[in-house]
Length: 281
Ligand SMILES: [Zn+2]
Image 1: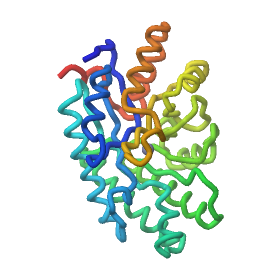
Image 2: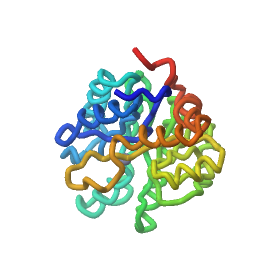
Image 3: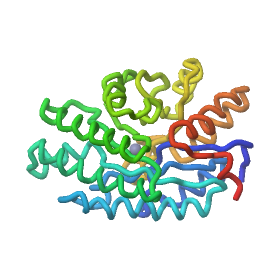
Image 4: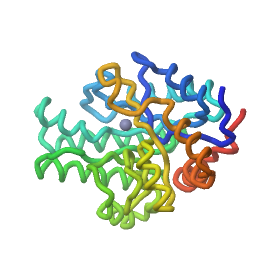
């Protein structure tokens, strides 16, 4: 086991029991990773074709179970992040005959169920967003309604909201909606970010070039892989060892401050988690 002398948090990772599952956590741990934010996989990847908000529970509970198993391996711990993948809107409208407003209602109901787990302390944060590909105006509006519902819930349960969105460095519209609801701007986290972001906290994909941009920006940021643990898409994203390896690279390069920002200060500020205090048990 490699000790990098600092907490090392991957802010957005998925695990699938049918694929690498806990083996990916062991890989992460072995190279110095200590903490994970484990995001539930898209519901349909677990063969859950939800018809009501309640139907998402199986997906959420599997994520909570995996986070508990991961915590047993890690020197730090894993926390579940629960929500409804924004791509579900397309699956519902294109393949299951839903109208956009019906898809919206179902996705909002799923998010409301996710919030119950945050309220009772079994999950750390929520996840929502809108498609990263072109959609009709009606689907875009429905998706933004879902996203705003996510903000309502984040305000309600006093938690952070991870977002999957279109490729952009400007989420000013979302920041405005967050402000209207008194959700602190930093609690809006853009997953799959490129290093620079207006309107929230970037969770930077751990490519060297993006991390370099984040360091230049000199703003709070997080690091992630979006490892999807999907046997059909082995090269689609970064592997589970990437964040610890990038932390090693940053430390070798004298960027201790950036490591503290991404793995201690920003997690504290955004989620209220103590990555130092939860280490080593
Ligand atoms: Zn993801």
